[in-house]
Length: 228
Image 1 (cartoon, helix red, strand yellow):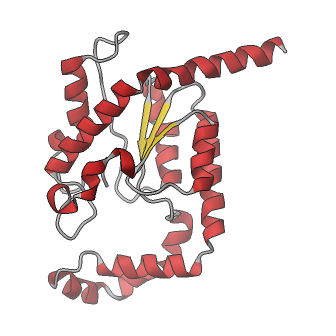
Image 2 (cartoon, one colour; image 1 turned 30 degrees about the vertical axis):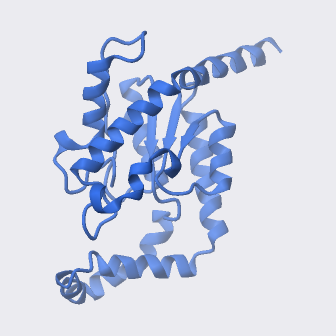
């Protein structure tokens, strides 16, 4: 929901704010104009996010992929088996929502999904998604961001494919939910989006050598393989 901008105006979400800051400060010497395209959509899991880029994102010919994901446990192909709860208990859900519980039925669905789905099955699925995507994207640099701990198996897949990975320790503002997140939701408010855009800008500028080294290393690997 952080990139999708749930409950925020489009002009106030972090991709828009990041684009403004990049065009104002122009931190990369080889680029004069910056465009940050937001392909996020509500309720997308890793597989849906990856497919969205394959179908639409690649056509924009980006210079860099910034991938923000905060849920590694959800696999929609497995999760939606449990969604019948939503239809059966809709009225109960409305009553609970009025009492301050946001999306209570979805939380019940999620709890049952986690209880009944083996963790290793979830991780194996996500590993395949990341591996396939990182192969598909070719030599495009990837910066992968998350407010939550990335499972070690998935982190290894990312790092073994030269993606730069940043997590909660790099986003200290996320430890202050009362100020930067919407009440009763795990979603950034307007202040949070601005803070995230600043944090990502700082990460990009401090690590620009490593980011664009990804592309150089990938090209070198292709050249070495060809010569061999």
